[in-house]
Every structure is written in C-alpha cells, then in structure tokens.
Length: 586
Image 1 (tube, helix red, strand yellow):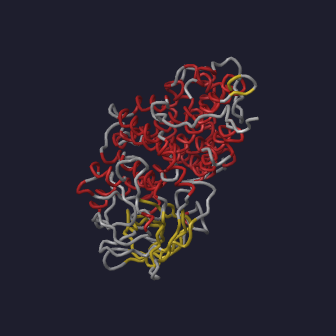
Image 2 (spheres, one colour; image 1 turned 120 degrees about the horizontal axis):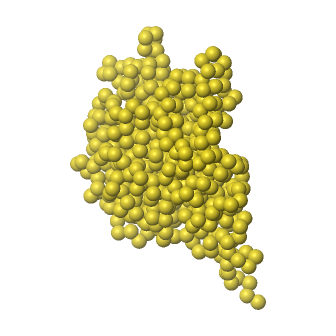
Image 3 (cartoon, helix red, strand yellow; image 1 turned 30 degrees about the horizontal axis):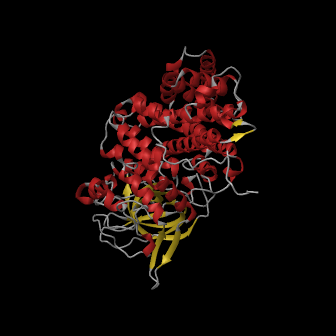
C-alpha cells in the first residue's frame, strides 16, 4: 500500500504578481497615484512574488539578528549582524524607492506610489519595513533641520544604493570591519549583489543610502515620553552630549537616530528636545552608542530591536530647545501612516494566502472555496483588506507635498491618520488569525507564512501609540482642533446618499461628536467612550471610501457587515450579499 503519495495538497503560491493580482491596490493607485506608477509597481510585484524573494523572507526570519558588542580584540563595536537574505530584501526595497521616493521626486501622487511600493515589500517580509518606514518619516524632520552636513545626509537619504554596515556621513566607504557574514550576498540565481544592481539608480555621487531610526521610549515612562530622564548638555561647538538609557530602539544599525532628551536649567528652555544622533561622527569616528541587548520579540524577528545606552553621545539639536515633541511629530505622523499601510499589506498577504489555499484544496467532495461557510469567511477577509488598502492610500495622498499648502487636507490627515491607525491596526491580528485558520493545521506551522504574519500584526497596533494613546489623541483633537473634525466629516460626507445605513450612522456619529465636545468643554471626562468613538469614526471613513470607490457589491457588503449588521467575527455577514463577486477579487 502506498502511504506517502501526496494528494490534495496546495501548490506553493509563487510566481504571482503581487501588484497586478491585488485589485484594490491597483484601483487605489489609479485613483490617487501618478500616471507612471503602474509599470514600476508591476515590476516590484513580480519580484516580491517570486520564489527566491519569498525564500529570502523566510531566511531573514529564521536566522535572526545577532548582537556583537565587541570585536575579537576587545574593542567595543556595538554592531548587529543580519543574515545575507535580510540585506537582499532591504536592498531591493531601497532600490525601488520604498523609503524616500516621495521626497526625492515630490509631486501629486508621489506619496501614494511610495506607499504602494512599501506595501508590496512589507506584504512578504515586514521586518525590514521598520527601518524603511523610519527613514521615510525621518526625512520629514531632516528636511527642516539645521545640522552639520545636512546636505550630505539628505543626499544619502535619497539614494537608492544600499550597502550593509556603518558608513561615513559624507562618504561611501565603510568605517569599520564587521563580521564577514554581514556582507550582502546575491540572491540565488541573481546576476549581481544588491549594491551592484542598485548602483545605476543611486543618489548623486554614488552615495550609499542612509537609514534613520528613532529612540524615544524609556523604561519608566513608555508612551509618556515627558517622563524621560535621558538628558543632554550643550557643548561649546554647538553640539550636545546625551546621557541616558532608551528602552526601545529599533533597527540599531541605522545610520542616524532622532532622539528625545531633557535639556536646560533655564525655565524658558527646560524640557524635552529632539536631537539628530549619527552612529558615525563627521570626523569618521564612532559615536558612543552602546547596544545593551536585543529584544526577544513576539514577531518582527528579522528586524533587530534593542536597548541602548548613551554616555555623552554626541547629537545636534533639531528644532527649538524644549520643543522636542513638536519637532518629532512629523516623523510620528508618517510612521503612524506606515503602521496603517503595513497592516493593510499584512491583510493582503493573509487573504491572498487563504484564498489560494481554499481554491486548491478539496474537502467533503468539493473545493473549499465553493462551500458557503468558507465563501463567507474569504469574502469578509477581502472586505477588510480592501477597506484598509483604500484608507491607507487615501491617507498617503493627504501626505503629498501639495497637501502641505491645503489647510483642509492637513486638518483631515491629522485626525484621519490617528483614526485609521487605531481601527485598521486593531483589526489586523484578528484578520491574520482567521486567515491562518483557513489553512487548518498547515497555517499553524512555520512552514507557511501566516504563522509569521499572525505574530507580526500586533506590533502595528502597539508601535507609535497603542490603542488607548491613539483614542485619547482623537479626543484631544476633538477638544482642541475642531477644524480637523470639520475636514473629516466633509471628506466622509461625500458618500452621503449612497447608502441609507451609512447615512444614519454618519448622522449618529456627528451627534456623538457634538455631545462629547460639549462634555469636554465643560471639563468633564469622555475617556470611557474614546475607543467606541474612534472605532465608529474609522468605520465611517472606510465605509465612505468603499461606497465612493469600490464596486457596488463590495461596498454594499462592507456597510451591511460593519454598520448594519456588525459582528466581531469574520464570516458572519448578513444574507443576500453577492459573496462570490467579492471572493473573486481576493
């Protein structure tokens, strides 16, 4: 008897163009991106859908980063060694401008193009997306900063030529030896390494791309950064010496960091200030950056997160002294946006893998996808993915350069980014779990990518403000920035008249906003309703975008399932919807 003949197993999902097959992403780019985006995104979609790239994504997570505090001679080096696969992945993302293309060639739709590119790479390997995101966000601060060598730093930030290791701020040469395994190896079957492939697309003078990080959180305060104890003292040359401990510092091999520290004994300048802290100083020597340990995380394992000590570490003031939170907010806003984009990318991976499985797997005499209970689950997962994708790219459009002079668009993005960060990122883990369950026992093994995705999604809800922080920020905007709510409801209200259920909820949420604002104005607390309020705002935003831009069957099902018949469980959509049409888009 043959016992090892493999039957009814699903083929590997490789060779799929991850852009062209993602109809929601294609539609969103067509709506808000540039005319030239589709060709570039299709090329990237073919790359990230290839077997070689997916294998590199797996290797980068299986072979986790390793900390080397000293070299063999006892010199302190504080370097993190990554598997070559990680460098291949991030090198390909940088080569295609997933980090700073919107800054390098600003125009209407450029942020949308960049968001779509970022999503394609984050869909398959999310860990490397952390430094890519922080570099995109950090450029917003660097652009307005007044620091030594700013032009050189900007040139490097715009470069698409990636190379591993630490490099001089103003040159392309590495400044220190590293463990041999750190060097970037080419992908199997590739003609050259990422450095060689990318050199033709590099920035001016062949500069090596710079990556940025941030270090805000401390162990005694967490999200309460005003409780930070790290302090900075001014030096005669205009720099500052920073001393303290940071509890979370992701991607510690980045080239420079934006750091918050307390300054000043004068009441006029005392308070948190923001500093630009490079790993390598202008004279080519190493800055003091003591990596104490790497965090053992639930997910995001290909990316190193660390605790670091500053011991008279040199940094340069960014913005006004004592106004560090204001100075770093542009970076926080864009990393929050990337949390939404990253979660949407994860949702796409989840539903795509689940839909692939049920189309190729039979049970009880027929394909899984044709069984009504499974059809409802896949349709519901697709609804969530499409709504998140539309929301993410609409927000990206609000971050384009031309939006900076549009008062209404700035007000909209201020509130909508927080609202979407809360709702989309909150929905991510449950979405990943439901998709994983579609694969049955296979989904629960590390041989398939959804186990990794299930561990990954929670970080997006935590990073850059966990649920309570974001919901309370929405209440703060309600009390202090009513113009943001006016802009938000103006945007959302463009769908009025398209659906009776939506119209009723829009009226109800606007009335709730008025009630809560009145309560806050009287000095009362509305904190207990912050989460409910933010959830309903986010659902309205998604529903409005779906009603305006998605096919009618998709939009109708979303409104019915999220407003008219809301359920905390996927697959519990009301009867009478065209679920097959929705599944066909997955």
